[in-house]
Image 1 (cartoon, rainbow over the protein chains, first blue to last red):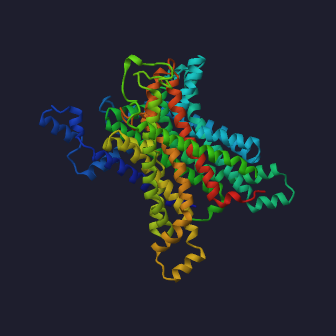
Image 2 (cartoon, rainbow over the protein chains, first blue to last red):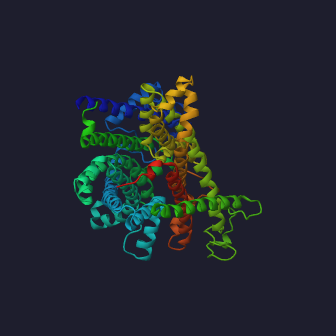
Image 3 (spheres, rainbow over the protein chains, first blue to last red):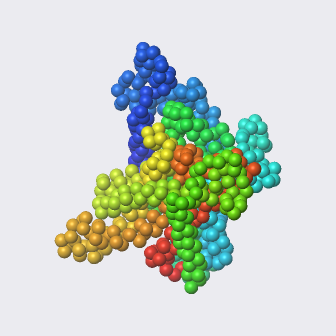
Length: 314
Length: 276
């Protein structure tokens, strides 16, 4: 187990290094000089040179990369061109919105998707199964931002029950929770649909296994077999899907935050993309990438813990 | 019997939707059809009528024409992106299946790594180098599709390499490449086609998202995602501007996934297994 852990941790570090290398490479092949971008094209040559030196742009690329990575490890992501404040501060300011949004929708997706999938599997071939499969098929085809717009139309414009967008801050208490209801639902429903389909498939596949047939032959009822034998095993593939979903959830928050004008990481990132504010874009990209890689690392470990068959293997 | 009855309508509906979509996209490109990109502010926000089937938008453009022309952008991005994914991913997956050891490990590890990035994040990172536009969307969604096809091709091809007839043909003097192309590829081709169909649906969804946030198709090319972006502030005034392009996206995606599902029933022998 410890050997496995060591190998995985080394793998994690290597992956993070490769990811940061790719982001750094994409950043340096960009046309245009960041120093010139900050000062404008009419800057004097010696001021430009001084800033370039200050930003470390005259150093070799490898030294720049290492400096950048070590800076990030100490929480230094550089300074935003447009806001003129450290990128780390911008990110920390936005996290209290993006993180709760991501986790709330993941929670809602789990609460709806897993029981939905089990229900469909237990009713395989009957009306409820077809109904759930049809519903999830349609939900998966909807763009989440369109779903969000439909929710706004129904709940904010036709029925003035919920806010159409904006965020009053957590100090707003109940108003803050209300502002997150529609974004959470819009993010969670397609994810729940995907989870339900995966869960249904996983349960059906475990129900085909010989030990389930044996348990049925011993006289256990279908429900008992489903709950005691099929469910724990069906969770294993579902867990890895949940790990994958996390990265799609993050991408989803980027778009959904824009639909609802929520001041989160995603909105900051897209604004930065349009303003060519490179340190902000790369900083947020690295935060997203690192969290996706870490989540898949954790999920991998959890899968091992849950599946005793994998425990002995390196 | 029961399953057949439920599967058939999906197959028919899926094919009809896609054929209809391609026909509408083709018609919108005919030279004598009115150009939907022409702006005529005097005709703005007209309700649906005989002349404008879906009415006009905030700039007086014909919404029906825009939706039809939007299918062109959606379909071309989807086909190119999925084409990139399949053209790179399938050979990589087959290579990983044919070889054991470090090459196999390297391909699969790299694959898991790329798979961790949604097309949107790839598009944002590429935006600086390629810039917004159809090409950015094609490349970003294409990159995202590569590991999907690698994984699928690997999973399908690996068990085939252990079968007896592969050993037999090796005894007959056939090389690895010959076996891969002559024996393995035909056996996984059905699954590849199913995957292509399903990925086309997801690619349309991804393209809409990219265009919606301004990283995909750029003006004046009509695109469903951008129509939704423009409609958002008008949703209280003219909800149809938001309803119609969104429904078009959903219908197109549904068409491809329904067809993919139906095809996989034909290709996948597991589907015919009796379940206790």
